[in-house]
Image 1 (tube, rainbow, N blue to C red):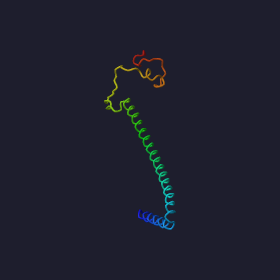
Image 2: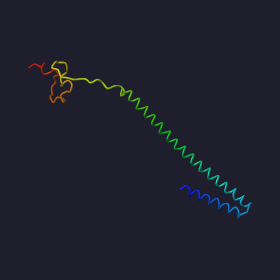
Image 3: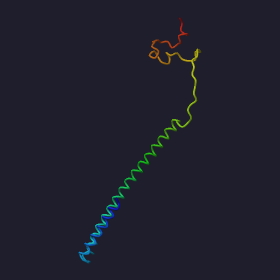
Image 4: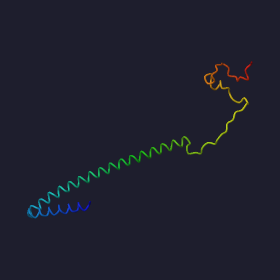
Length: 129
């Protein structure tokens, strides 16, 4: 309700005018000087407080912006190193073959992977019976 504040301001000015009229011109002049000094100091202190508050908020905004930029740069560099921006690899089909082109499971996994303990690394088809 802005009109309520306006009416309060008008009433304060009216009361101040009546006070000045009752004090006399010379006393009113001295009173107005002292009152003006206090109002000036209060205005200056409010301006300094507001300036420091906005400066602090701008400092936090700048720090947040710097952090966001450095994290973005770090993640972008990581994506380049890992080739994440390149197209996906081509799909490859795998199929078993009966040809002897691979090492036996024992040679690759050892006896723990196959469940069989043996010193031989030859495929079972190459072992003498």
